[in-house]
Amino acid sequence: MSSKARGSGPARSSAQQDIHLDQARLRALAHPVRLTVLSRLRQRGPSTASRLARELDILPGTASYHLRQLAAHGFIVEVVGQGTGRELWWQAAHQQSIHDPAAFAPEDEQASRAYTRAVVLARADLLRQAADEVPLLPQQWANASVFSDVLLHLTPADAVRLKDEVLAVVARYRDRETDHTTAPAPLTVQFQVFPVPGTVGLEQDPS
Image (cartoon, rainbow, N blue to C red; front, side, top):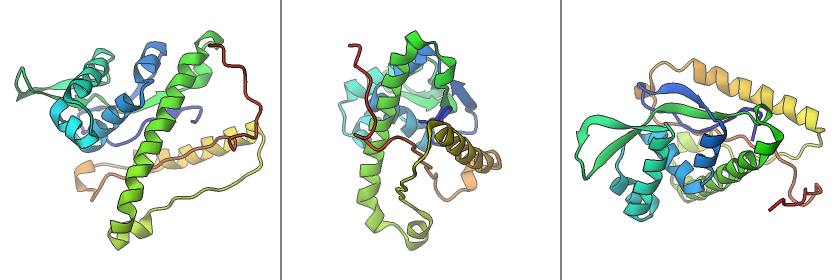
């Protein structure tokens, strides 16, 4: 997670650029399946509960519940003029979510960490899906992809500088995009910086 952790995926051109996560929205997104549903709408465009249920291998009722929660907190909106009362179509309202841990008071830290955990679980599931497709990718996309794990020995301050610099590069490529419809495929860029598990003393779980 970065000091401004960003959600994934390009959305429809009608979507606003960003949504900044307050405490209520953090709590709403602190579920890996809900994050996956939102990412799917951002990456692949409008869909319905039944379609999402098939794609994600979840129950239609589960998909409907998560869609209602996302809509209630302003992450998605109904596609006007498409679908029926029994089968609504939904689209993302923003291209990405921005979470700035420094903006939260200490008493709100648990909500921030719960959201971060959900992000990690959702990204891990996406990587498992990618692992199944890697052997089947066209050569040009195989050459363009990278799955890297680099060990660095840094202070927390160094890590902050590193993530800010890398995110600035990603933002530069994002900002120069003009027309999503001309791209051959949406590209997800994942960037993680965290201590090697088991090497840092953990705080006592307040629960």
